[in-house]
Image (cartoon, rainbow, N blue to C red; front, side):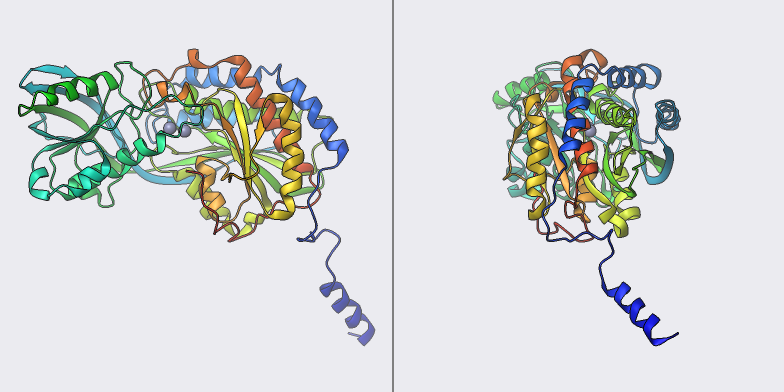
Length: 480
Ligand code: ZN
Ligand code: ZN
C-alpha cells in the first residue's frame, strides 16, 4: 500500500465518523420533531387500538399463566396483531423457565371456631400432601418478627404474617413492603422448619378475593406450601388469634413445579429511517396470573405501547430511529422475559437508546422520571414539556429504570424512562380474579397511549443519545 494511502486510512480510522456521537455534547430534540409529537398526542387521545387490544386479549385468550395452556395461543395472537397493525418486522426470541401449575386450593380454621377461609397459592408454592395438612398457627406482624423468632417456636407450624392492609395510594408505595413479605417470607419460614406459610394479601381492597403473586425458594426441593388470605379473611384470622386460644388451620394446595417450559418474547418494530439499528425499547408483559383475565396486568401495557408505536407507524415518515415493542414472556414468576432480553442483547445495549415499559394498569400517568447521562437531561426536559399538557409532572431528581421487565435491561446499561401511573385503584384488583376488562377506563388508557407516543417519538428523533452503554448506570439505585 502506498504511504500516502496508508496515511489517509489512518486519518480515517482516528477521526470520528460523521455517524459517531460526541458523548459529551448535549442531547437535544429538534423543534420539527416536537411539532410532530404534539400531533401524535392529539391523535392518541382518540385512539381505539389500545382498548381493542386489551378487549381482544382478555376476550379471545383470557388468563395467561406463563407456560399454561394459553401461553402459545397468546403468542400466536400477538404475532398476528403486530402484523395486522402494520409493524415492519415481527419476530420471537425463546425464553425458558421452570413451569409452575395451580390445580386447587382450600383453607379453613379448624380450631377454635371452624370456618372456611379464602386463599390462593403463591407462584412457586409447593403443594400440600394429598388431602391437605393441619397445624397450629404462629402469627407475626412483620417479616422482621419472623426473622427474629426462634426456630423451635416455628417448627411444624403454619406461619402467618399479618402485615397491615395496603393503603390505596397514588404511588403504590406500600406494595414494596407487602411484596417483600410475599417473596422472602416463605423461604424464611421454610428454613425454620414451618409446615406452611400464609400472609395477608398484598392488596388495598376489602373484597373476599385473595391476591396471588410469586414467591421464591432458592432450592425448590425445600419449598413449602405458601398462600395469601383475602383481606377479610386475614381480618377474621386476626380476630380469632386475638382470643388467645390455640388456632389450627387446614390447608390443601394442589400446585407445584412441572418441568421446564420454553416460551418466547414476541417482538415487533417500526423501523427507523436514518438509524434503523438504534431503537426505543418499550412493551409490556404478555403473561398474566391465572385468576383474572389480566386486563390491567398487563394487557393494558401491551395495548398502550403497541397502540403508541402503531400511531408512529401511521405517520407519513418513519422516525430517525426504530421503535421496538416487546410483549415479554413470564414477567410474573421472576422477570424471565426481561432477563432473557438483557442476556441476549447486552453486548449491543447501546443500541437501545432509551426504554419505558408499561406495567401498572391503565389509569393515568401522573409523573415522568428518568435515569440518563447528565448531557441528556435537557432532552428529557423537552420530552417532559411535551407531556405536560397531559397533566404529567416531571421529577428531575427521581430515577427511572424503565419498568419491571426493563429493570433487567436497565441493569446492563440501558437508559430508562419511567412513566408512572396513578395506582390508587390498581392494587384493589392486582393479581386477583377481579383483574378484568371492566376496570379499564378508556379516557385514562388513551392518556397513556398519548404519553408513550410522544416519549417514544421524541427519543427516536433526538440528536445525540441518552447514555445507554454496556455497564452504564451500574451505580444508580432502582426506584423499587
Ligand atoms: Zn405486571
Ligand atoms: Zn403482576
